Length: 90
Image 1 (tube, one colour):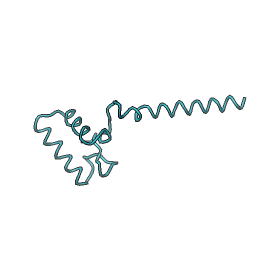
Image 2: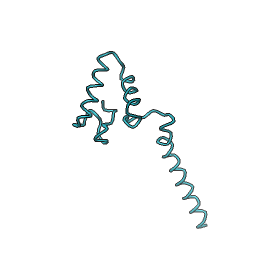
Image 3: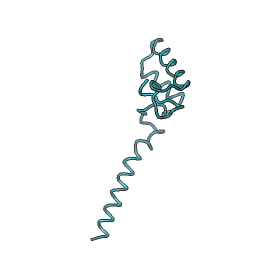
């Protein structure tokens, strides 16, 4: 429950949130675990139902490539700008 984001609070896990939606999600998780599903199966169900954003550890797939690649692209872009700036000053 600590790895799933509350859709109402958006900054808290469903474990920490007092929102009614988080309570419903906690109940759903408990019910599915008691029914014999693994935590990974429950997480996959919630991701399918609410989207990758509900997980604090999103899967690497077509929808999340930007999330995973954006930091690298920004870092490389910054390095290029710094190198150009150094080259211009010389």
